[in-house]
Image 1: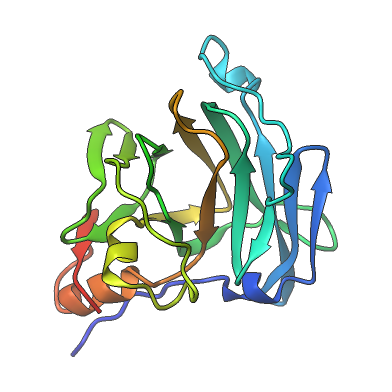
Image 2: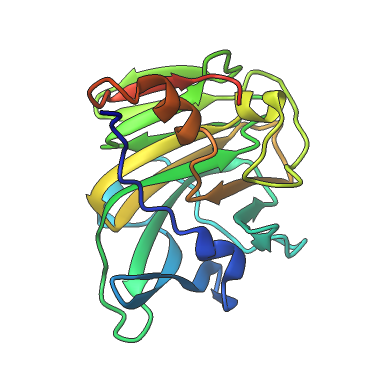
Length: 226
């Protein structure tokens, strides 16, 4: 019998009722129903969080281009200046504000490109990239680092249907039994007016699942061309 993975993918980001800002912190409201609950996704700058005390992190400032928000069904956080940023993503109940955990979901980061753009995620259940990814991957327990190697790609027209080159500049982190996770974004001194694009999408996960549907779950995989 073919095995399938029970992914939860908040595709409702493309139908978000509202994108709001609280200072520099983005908030995507009415992201997706889950078990009868409407979920919001908040993104908070945690560079000055006690957890990261002593780390050389950069406080986020709202971008002057006003790019931060929704774009073609995905979320975007834009940066004016280089720096070493840390964000906390959190799902909450739209009515109560209480945190909500999801059993398993993919979190795709698109358009990781440029001159050394780097993203770091820790304590993930899995990592999925294209089998010919142009991102350099490093691992220092418990964190994965993905670094752009001077390649540039265009923003996807459809975040659920990527070109091969766009897949090569995309990484999917898989999270299990959580509703809160931190993401580090590092832009070197030559990286100005950049942004990250994200969505809970199976755009790479589906490729990987097709290849491993008859095998046990693996912590890490490479996706093939769709």
